[in-house]
Length: 275
Image (cartoon, rainbow, N blue to C red; front, side):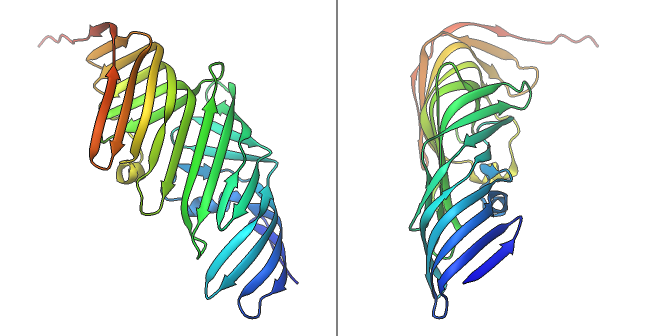
């Protein structure tokens, strides 16, 4: 039996055979998810300091690992790039670890707005895949929001030259895997949105990784507008009619925009200067 206490990173007890490889049961007393952030690339998801606990079986030989078990946490704070200026707190998540895949059940979560401190209730799923050498291969997040609890979503689509910031409800799925493009899909009903022709600032890592495969439907409900260009003082502002719908699809280099957009009205701004 081997006890490891490296709090606040990890605390565990290992019981089994470690002479020729590893064949052991591990009692994980605490594992700090914040430690994983160093290896999240691209970092569209990061974790607050929160602790997993549970049990796992570990098989390893010649540096190749297989992990299986069950883990849980009291709560888990998650920061998601596509959910800007908000904290997602997953309540009492439980995880199944099978063949190096860590998958949560669908859990209740609260989204807290940093500015207004308003709280929204959503359903949340998260997962993490490890390689046989225990590096991070990919991760996934999935959210379901109802009409009474819309969440602010940002969807920068640099390959299309479009940047969307909206309060949305519906289904949103985000995934990344080693050697594959990021995936961003789902169907969102949006209110109080700005669709910018041209890009607002976004992080350097997204410039490198931002060419995600997209299969996303946006249903524009109320108070939505298109502006050009992406700056504090746009030249054109177009108000969209309610119930317009657009589907953005990108697979590799194939880009398609489908749907009908009805325009309710708009404004053209100009500046007059005297010399």
